[in-house]
Length: 88
Image 1 (cartoon, helix red, strand yellow):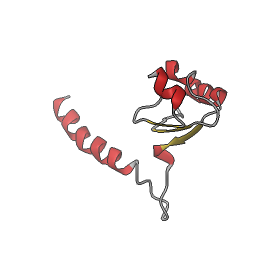
Image 2 (image 1 turned 180 degrees about the vertical axis):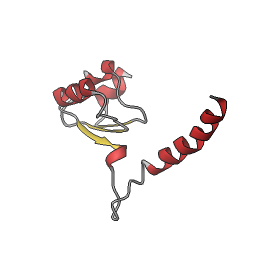
Image 3 (image 1 turned 60 degrees about the vertical axis):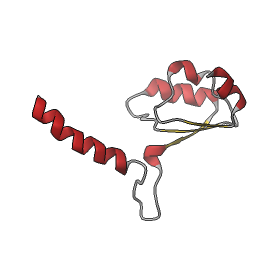
Image 4 (image 1 turned 60 degrees about the horizontal axis):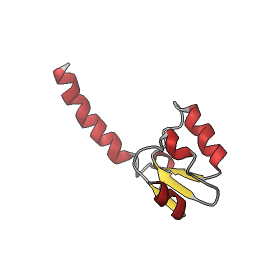
């Protein structure tokens, strides 16, 4: 993984970067992933320190102000909540 981070101008992930990955990110690199920064101030500090340009899937909006990348995840969570509630 270190080789990928070192050679890539853009890193595309699904899950937020782990602390061991923060130090591998650098200026002039783009990180595109779900970030979930609100509950994780340490991640925010790590990303800022790296100088990476981070784009969070959950903040991408369409022309109407919708959240097209977050909507499918919300739909899955909604469907799973029924199953989770049924087994609780």
